[in-house]
Each structure stands twice: as C-alpha cells, then as structure tokens.
Image (cartoon, rainbow, N blue to C red):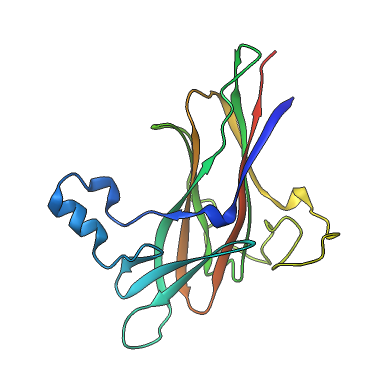
Length: 205
C-alpha cells in the first residue's frame, strides 16, 4: 500500500557541472567551473546544455557553441531533491517507486538515458541505458497525457503515461534525490522538458 507520494516540480532542476565529482582542490574546482555559467553547462566539443526554468517545468536545450550551427551530441545530469518522510507511526518508510513526468520533442535525438535515486550519499536505485536513442521509435510516452503546456484547468492527466520504475525494498534513512541523465544524439533545435519528479513511499505492515 502506498503511504505517501512525494513530488517536486520540474522547475526545481539543478544541473551538475561537468567535473564536479572530481573537484577536491582549487585547481579541480576551477576546472569544474570552466565554460559553465550556472544554467549553461559546457559538454565539450563545442556543445553546451542550457536549462530554462519556466512555470510548467524545466526545458533542456543542447546547443552548438562553435561558429556554425551544427547538430551536437553529449550527455549531462540534472538533480531533483524529493521531500522525504522517514518515520511514520514509529516505523521506517520504504521507497517504493520513482516517477518522472517529462516530454521530449524528438525521442530519437534527445531522451533520458539513466535514472538513479540517492538516500543521502547512498545510491539505492540505478537504471542505465533506459532509452537507446538510436532504437527509440514513436512519440514520447511519458508526458502524463498532457502534451506541451495548457492553461485549461480541466485537462486530465493520464498517470499511465509517466516514466515509472520500482525501487525494491529500500528503507529510507535520509533525504532522497533523483538524478536524471539526459543524452543528446545529433540534436539540433530539439528540447526535452521535465515537468515533475516523484517518489512513492510505503510502510511495511
């Protein structure tokens, strides 16, 4: 039985600076900031990713930073902190499922490649190679049933159209964060939007 379902809005995205995991002194910290301007992160080979936060989510656009406007490839991570219950009625909560509401203009060229869930500094879930961009076919299927954006307050969600993966038997001790790796393959004038990210929690009998 799901006890809690805790979500955070897509506009709360944080981009990870390339090189951050290896930054331990003034030189490696400086390297992690080279070419990065907060919401624009350098991916190398004249590629950057921009994070544009809007009312309905965060839009990620891969751009060519060279002299020509060529398609570019690369990957990057974004992070979402999830409001996390830990103890309920004297019992420890378990993480049950991770969910993402997102949409990509072109699943073949820009899509989610990996998802990890962290409990503090302990990784409790990982899935890689989620969408092999070269083989992905058809329209995006993880937009919650509402494509693009709408001011129609009566628009209906389709919860079957959410990215969803089970987290097997993981007690929660600290705060949870969901890390999402996005990969571009020859992307140009395409973008991916994340609208919200959530985790379901349950309380074992």
